[in-house]
Image (tube, rainbow over all chains, first blue to last red; front, side):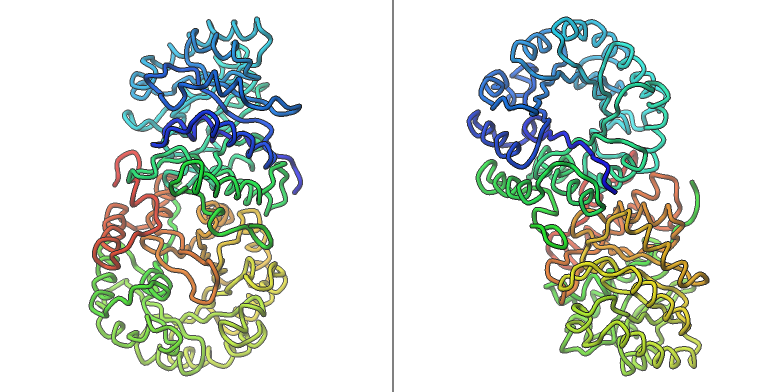
Length: 301
Length: 301
């Protein structure tokens, strides 16, 4: 196999936002530079939400002002409302990501909104990005299950995908926010979302909370998905909490795909080195990835 | 989905044999009893190898004499040579498992034998089990990659499977001893082994060293495999394989399969409880499974 798979690195945003360590701006910029050196071309680097809600992202304007602007490297900023969208556009993000929520329980607690209300809000603020000529993407969170409501109807996920496409999202990500997707369900939901948004690129965002993330990546790739979110070192959960809920580790995804012959453009050794840098210098606490510990096969790491 | 998948619990053998903690015989028996209470019907419980090579299995005769003999619970003993086979039969194992090795590098270090020599040896000692009316199965170790030689030719794995079937193995397991299988390769090797041994049941034995185990389980189940090895708590490894961390955790496999609608006969809560017992009492050190930490979804754990 030699089909290219695009890895969207989410470590500097989704990875850091829940970490108990508040990484200083200059260290975040070093993290971003190390990721670029390892071959990353597209990454979540900033979140324009209220600094009291997500203190780890309070310096997002400063981060965006300091990261290197190189040909072919694209930065994604997260925005959940009009103010966030304006800040993301002012900060010259290459792309703005909005989050629709697939379930009420999580939606009310996380964004104070129902699924429909998040779709309505996207209608309104997507226009701002369109006016600036900046692409917008949508992540549908808790798309595979909600920690408060339990199962999430597949029709609601498809409905939101249709709304996102209609409002001009260039890409729709299905987010397994709490790590409850299983690979059979991944294939079903991809098919349903494809039917609802046939002309929009799909991206997958998996957490490894219950060890299923790489199974879900495999199922997604077998369903024709070409874009996968992952975070260097698998950061994104609390390493000190019993229910560590990190993103799937970039080096684990890259290892599996490379071993099967796919191309990602990522240098596995460089990504492993960056994960180890996070562990020893960037965050100074243990990380969740397995390949950073075991090394690649047969040669790498 | 409601197809039944048989879980072979390997914790009491493959799990314990490399653990730094030497579990006393009576605690092993308690472990076995807890597994049975959680629904396990078939498990590796003993290894009849030289006690100097694998001290953790030195009490295998005593363990087999003490475990409860209940209707429908089957115990597998491992044997690598004639003396081991005779001990396993004397100990009244319900089934004896033999290991053929798919690569020279690992074979010479682990069993002092080439792949062909392990197949020749099986020809000779399988007869002893046949004479006693005891079923024998074969695990082909390092079937997806060798820590010393690197890639393992698929043809050699198929050749060994053909030899195992011809000598009367009731089941052939492909062992990813060092955790380097990827799900695409899993499907290819299953197809090749099926062609070589079309009438023999196949079983899969995955380690999660590089986080790919559940992806490999999914690929195997999609290929029609109905029997999966797993160890409670993800304990285990191989003393002769560098960095070969644990088996895939039983509770992680069971969680994924149940969530997708498959039946395993295992009680997930009971298995999680047993994994936690290993952590706090049985072994008194951290375990590798994720579902024992995070709990099931939406209800369990």
